Image (cartoon, rainbow, N blue to C red; front, top):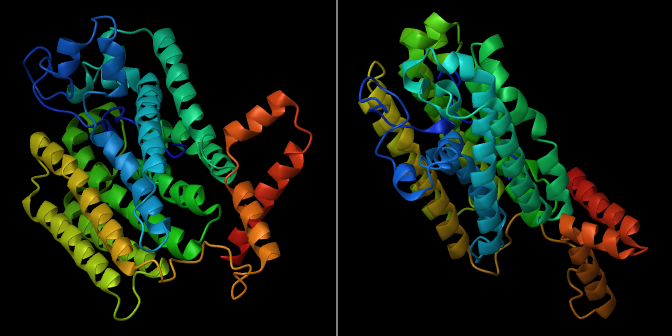
Length: 407
């Protein structure tokens, strides 16, 4: 939830998390607002522009934000168990709220650009269906929902989520100052890959999180560069910068490098999480699933037509399936590892070999409770005037810092 970002491209350049479709409101040209979308048929007329602003009718951006979170949660799960369904649900709700908030911020920054780009000219702020003040109020509502989700997570995850705020706030400005706004988007939208691990384990294991984050970042460079090719002509005229314009005829070789690096990063994350053990059935399943995901990226590279906006959109949207393949591979591998196999480095090592020692068991239980202290627990304790809440917070954060340092 704290890692959400981005929204649609301003002048269309970066930010494929907006998704979209062809066939505009007026029936002409290529735009990402359609007259036949379900919003118009199922929502009150006054609410439709807000739904368009948050891209509720185009969930591809939410999927792209959510997948790294789910990958991380699944990798952090104990061996032999599926990812925590409640935690996955919280991150899904946060992804919807933060994707919508990111799109709102993006469209506020870029409403003048959007009027000059064919695909974005019918967005609510660009066409005048909403005023900036209304969009700002809606942004506050979405951020309130996202904050509620974040506070339901363990305290170390709350701190990590809040630390991501500058990334998604500054992303819409990147297309004005760099030819690589997709790199900024990748840093923001994949932050959930770090956050998911922290929410499960209470620490950061860089042997897992660093290659996961790096691989996901390269994946974003891949799919969002394809997305940016939809608008390259209008972007060039409007002065909007993107990797599509920067790479030009070298796009396909660059996409090949991005895709290869993405698979390599995901392979490294799996190995760091213990999925690469020799003779491990779980490891075999994971790397076979990763090979299938790599085959999907190869299919994208072989079939994409970069001069066709509808085809760029089709390939971009297919990355939902790539994310699903990776997630399925991680979950299957974790389930096959068996409960007796060590699942990474996140569990406490205290008391190993002394399971019958009551003192060690009590200590482990106490530390586990501190590690799972949530933001709402802190607020409730403050409201009730509990005297020990400050020391509990220090212990929870200190535990996370200690474990992160060990990792």
